[in-house]
Image 1 (cartoon, helix red, strand yellow):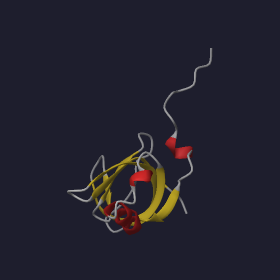
Image 2: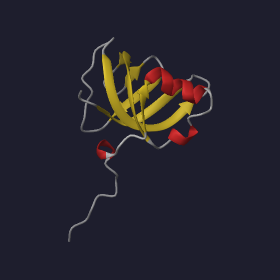
Image 3: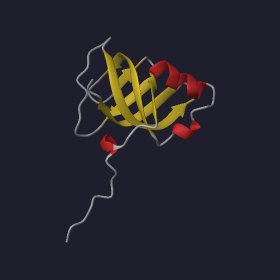
Amino acid sequence: YYTQSLKPDYTKKAPILSTDANNLIWRFQMNEGEELINQIVQITGKVTGFDSLLTIINHRIICSPNAEARLQVAINDTIHIKGRCIGYDDLLEELRLDHVVKIKN
């Protein structure tokens, strides 16, 4: 019998918002981003940090890449990504994304 995976494939879902990183952070700072939690967004921003597991965009967006897709980036690269918003930390003013994939232009 054929069984389908219960995990959704976020890489094939269309984003509900396409914007730049600063605009996305601003939405959450103004308490206008709550409807974006658990939704797919596409953003453009500058890489300001990374390690083996996470990529940081514009100092405030922490991206966890999709398990199959590693983000090949360097500091100060401008990249276009798509991922699921999983939470915003008011204290640190950081937004977290998971299932992040790089969009090719």
